[in-house]
Amino acid sequence: CSQIGLQDATAAATAEKGLHMQKVGSGSVRAALAELVALPCLFTLWPRPGAAREAPRIKWTKVRTASGQRQDLPILVAKDNVVRVAKGWQGRVSLPAYPRHRVNATLLLGPLRASDSGLYRCQVVRGIEDEQDLVPLEVTGVVFHYRAAQDRYSLTFAEAQEACRLNSATIAAPRHLQAAFEDGFDNCDAGWLSDRTVRYPITQSRPGCYGDRSSLPGVRNYGRRDPRELYDVYCFARELGGEVFYVGLARRLTLAGARAQCRRQGAVLASVGQLHLAWHEGLDQCDPGWLADGSVRYPIQTPRRRCGGPVPGVRTVYSFANRTRFPSPGERYDAYCFRGESCLVGGLCLLRSLRDTPLDGAVLTWSLAHEHPLGRK
Ligand SMILES: *[C@@H]1O[C@H](CO)[C@@H](O)[C@H](O)[C@H]1NC(C)=O
Ligand SMILES: *[C@@H]1O[C@H](CO)[C@@H](O)[C@H](O)[C@H]1NC(C)=O
Image (cartoon, rainbow, N blue to C red):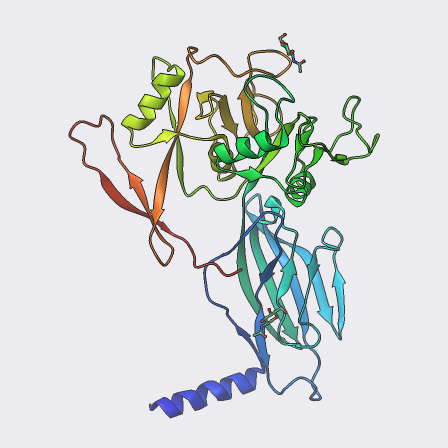
């Protein structure tokens, strides 16, 4: 049949159906921790809204996969110009176009938490008609506490900024620390933030960590401080841009040996920010390894015996029981290496992978690693 005929047929089907979801592209929406993100959802109505027919009902849910079963967690429902937001999402979601543009059910979500990553379902129902679209969301970036090699509370504000920079990160903004706190981050060490305030996140209040909030959970705040005062720091690492891998040899390595071993594998020792990002992406290894700053750490996803405590996180090995001082460079551990990817125009990234050690005779290969979805934000 002719092109015209086909279009007529489609139009007729749409008219009959009345309600039609406009699937908005593919690929996931990526956004950084603490940002706001728009999850698109557009549909068409026939006849136009305002006609005698019933108003559509918009419903947003988050798809959960619990014990293999799909369950949806309600977020909000909109009908007849009224938007009802579920408990747990209040103050963090809205439908900016509704009800002015009733066919635009785009959801605005944020400030984003790491736990917001996942699959979102937009559902529109009118009478017996029912249409839906799924939008995957990926929240990038991670906040971490950083203490200098020598002792607790030994960084001026300028040194704190530099410490984050040397670890593939920037000094965290208050909104980053707040988002991490809302996901359960608890750390009783006062650290610099980008606005020159000093704060720390406490989910379970306890003696010694009351700060300015006594027994309540919350981010403690010492206010803006003199930049010469000394504290730890909170850093924010945004994108890994490569891969972190673990190297465990039968004979463990000194710091210099670890550096050389990474180099032999076409890589460098990973920074603290890179290890945290790799942990965020799922790296789990119960073996302490050297990092570029001379610290020794390991990433734990699934807490287990003798792997540093009951909550997931990146563990740090200190010399002293009061959690200070990096190990001395002659001690022997494993290593975490980082191999960068190189991005061409258009967001196509190639991972530089020098597959096998040793270097002699090996050919440097470039393998196609992955294509960044062209960011819809
Ligand atoms: C839908 O609403 C969002 C949020 O207000 C807006 O950014 C977007 O441009 C709208 N899309 C269309 C097609 O109107
Ligand atoms: C931690 O312990 C070491 C060694 O006992 C000591 O030199 C250092 O001052 C202590 N630091 C803090 C913050 O208590």
